[in-house]
Image 1 (cartoon, rainbow, N blue to C red):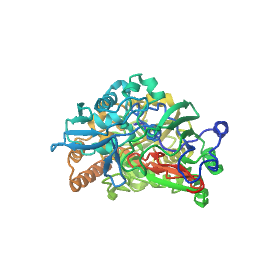
Image 2 (cartoon, helix red, strand yellow):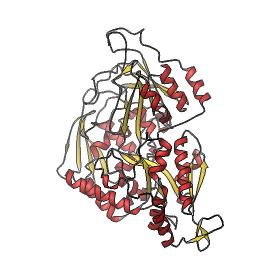
Image 3 (cartoon, rainbow, N blue to C red):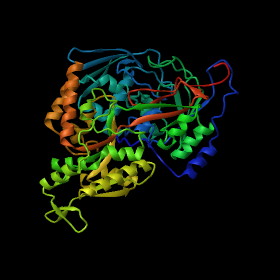
Image 4 (cartoon, rainbow, N blue to C red):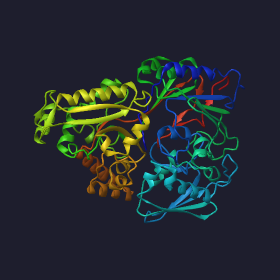
Amino acid sequence: MRRRPVMIALAAAGAGSVLGACGSAGPSADLPAGTKEGGELIFATDREPTCLDPHNSGDMPQTYISRQYLDSLVSMKADGTVVPWLADSWEISEDGLVYDFTLKSGVEFTDGEKLDADAVVANFEQIMDPDTQSSTALLYLSPYFVSAESVSELVVRVTLKRPYSPLLTVLAQAFFGIESPKAMARGLSGNCELPVGTGPFKVVEWRRNQEVVMVRNENYRSAPADAKHQGPAYVEKLTWRFLKDNTARFGALQSGKVHAIFNLPPESVPTATADDTIATQDFVHSCVPFALDLNTTNPALSDVRVRRALVHAADAEGIVASAYAGVFPYEGNAISTGTPFYDDAYHVPYAYDEVTANSLLDEAGWDGRDEAGYRTRDGERLSLRLPYNSDPGETPPADLTILQNFQAMEKRVGVDVVLLPTDGASLTAIRRDPAAFDIRGGYWNSPTAGVMYIKFSQETYEIDNGQNVSYAYDETLDEVLLEAAATTDQDRQQELYSRAQQLLTSQAWHIPLYPIQTRLAIRSDLVSDIWIEPSEGEPVLHDAYLIRDGI
């Protein structure tokens, strides 16, 4: 999943013109008193998906919006337990290879199609079909999945080739939201534009570069067991607006033009905190943190001494603090604090230490210097290419500051880091070409510590969809992570996942920087009961209602 940082910027004039054209959230005085029903909720976010179907591609903006119109088989609670959603119940075979899901009866997609076992099977088939171009859901299932089949009208059987204890938490994500087979049959382009689910809202229009308009599913009866209420959503209309500019987005919240925003800008945190009408919600994702991945196909970076030297020289904790002023905390472990089985022993695995960095580089044979002061070996400069998206919406100012500070810190020990501003299309091509880059920024959100397998295993390396960016794997690491996925013994899982964190730290295949967060700011005087679900940090608007007299 091409998971980009969740902070975006765009020309303020452009964002402002879109906002001005789309009206205002306004007060709720015109709504009936004493009820939660009615009105339009306007939610503003920073990034626009390239496709609304989360089965395709697999990027975070898709899950945030698709959570509003798709239901999943199960839902995950904050404590990690899984509760019913479209599946009323499930049975798991003793060997962990067969899952039988019994579906709720009487559920329909918003196009009138019936939810049954055949519909769920069709969803698994679409996810596993290479033509769907999934770079997320496919990675979760490929190492384990054998088949999905209808046992009866409401029972679907999923068979695995090896035990996969995180399967239920994985299926809770919007990436596995269940879509109408009739709608899926239209093909990728139609499904990207107007996907169809069983969820609380129905997509009616996607106004590119502006907003997605949704209306309430009046027949909604399939809310998850952990929802704040059952039945249809309270608001009649949901407008999901795209305001990339940080200032414009926060200004829209302050003025009441929107009810809530995704990604409260770091520079606006003090103002939001001091404002009694604004409430904030923060959620640290379970994930591989945003990190600088080191491409081991580069001969220099194939040497662990060089990789460790880069980490020691980076002062990663310092450059994150400088760029984000504490709003995004530093994380040096292979997984975030929000990830199950996180081990604090690897929070700061390589302390900032120029002396050690220099010593390691000398030991690796990079002990010469050219006229510019950069290290050389056999006359070749130690130069590393770091391409990044030149769109300030994809690489916001704070992240660009991190890259520039990283470049400056590595120069101190004689490493030439070349920052390459690149357009989005070119960067997509670079992702698949290990000869085109040496260092690349990215992250991977996941509700399971098994995310380490997705990022660093031989299997995902061989799938070659641009996720194993370090182009590295270790047989022992693979064995440890597969054993962890095969057991339900939590003590044993902790032991194994801690071992995996130790192995990844020792390899120094990447330089972790900060964990991804969902950060909401809400006009608490205008709207209530927006919450964040824990599998992917998705905002939930099914339970939200506009505040008016008597409420």
